[in-house]
Length: 195
Image (cartoon, one colour):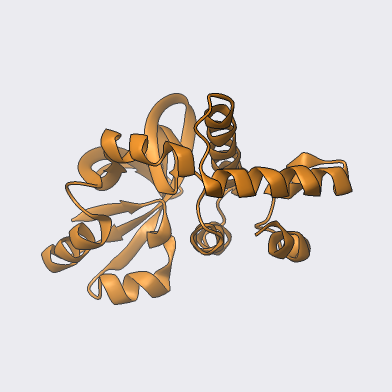
């Protein structure tokens, strides 16, 4: 069975533990799907967006292991979708986990991922040559969601702490976008100060 990874399962090391039978088939692009953070990664159908993915061939036991890890069916549901794979852009059907609407709603106030979780995805994006701007855009969207929630009066402690750090850093650098670009090596000091 083909399985599409776009989040922490881009990590080969983690997949070796979770899914010992899994084999990488290749990289691909989910066209018309947007990467989002709601503390953890999810995707949402969105016409003008694409999400780079890693396609795995997994066994039935691997699928059971992933079901447990992903919190299926309460936290993530499974869906079969079409994905374009490889250089010849061949279209295949594969299974993907998508966060449930209830889980998305419950995490709206804490949309930002942890630094550790984000770093797993950033490493995967680097390992497979994915456009890191897509990952950064998902992070910035999560920050906007928290800002909107803040203005509506329902900010969480994590969101408030992040916004304060973002504000203080942007005052120092005169560029608030730098505060969010903590996946690159040259910004490692920034990354450490931000968290």
